[in-house]
Length: 141
Image 1 (tube, helix red, strand yellow):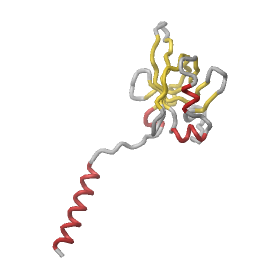
Image 2 (tube, helix red, strand yellow):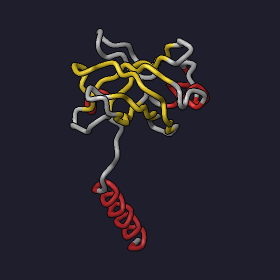
Image 3 (cartoon, one colour):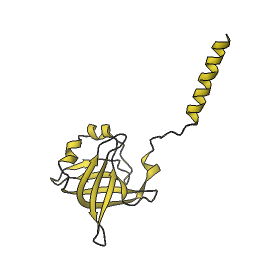
Image 4 (cartoon, one colour):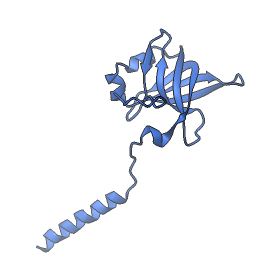
């Protein structure tokens, strides 16, 4: 009987320790990005990070002062990209080519970081790579 109680006490203690550890939750668009600060970015696609929970792609954008700035754009989840018909190859085949991005800036002040809504490829294809938040919003699909 004592061993049974000790086992339950040990399990309860382990559970409390796990609850006290920090967790890395997935946050909504509104927690990280500002839907009132969206803009258009033209530049050269330089790389892609195809990873969960979000993909990231990088674009060299010419700033107002003429200097090239490297921007990081976050996408919706990889599975959402795939369901909407966008795959890794769409990005890889266009590295080094000009692209157009519609995106909303990060709230935390990180320079040159935004959540992409759309990505227009050099052949004119418009890919939905994020949530539309500016015009009443469209749910991820």
